[in-house]
Image 1 (cartoon, helix red, strand yellow):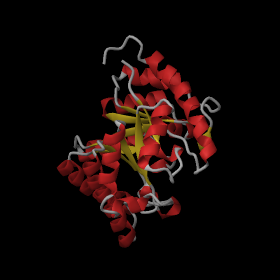
Image 2 (cartoon, rainbow, N blue to C red):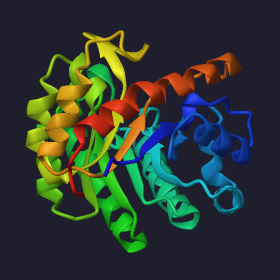
Image 3 (tube, rainbow, N blue to C red):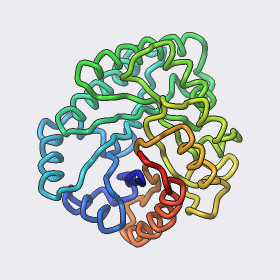
Length: 280
């Protein structure tokens, strides 16, 4: 049985309504959509509008096409370990609202951007503040029955699965797990196969994207240095059958939509080949 392949919402132009987005993802060969909540564009207000989650749920029911996961990346702008209390509290509020949104919309998994702070602002205190914030978020998530996962990022703080697993072990909750971006790991110069084995059964979702050393996005699939076949073989070997999502960006250019079937055509045979003969 081959796991389902989802599509990152930012691969689709923002101005389309929910029904059109879901239909485009389906017609492009994907099995679900991953919602994106980001602070750098107009997606964050979704969490502050009372009817947005209900509207999404109705669209999912009408189209018969699911939104399974949420990429909550807004904490790039509002890091959970910021020494500025107002920024940190805003970051916490965003995650708590994201959990409430997921609960109402029927989204099962939220993966978080693992930033305690940015650049030179980072220090041991920001790490402690981040731990405290994540602990509070996990309490909120467990009450709602929504799973959180920290994603391997493009900065050293949470670049490796080992760093995430240290946090997972410290908090020790089934509602906090690991989300692996094989592109980020490869671009950071780490071995994704080794990293996958470090995470083991705590890995609940995968971002599939191509990258090059030090270049974390906008590399067309098949033109980077990510060895998808080896990564998928490693995931099969640890028994992973969680979410897979193709991550790519349209930058609101409608002509990019023509590329989406090529993405699924590139990745689906690799998934099928990796899981061939597996009984999941």
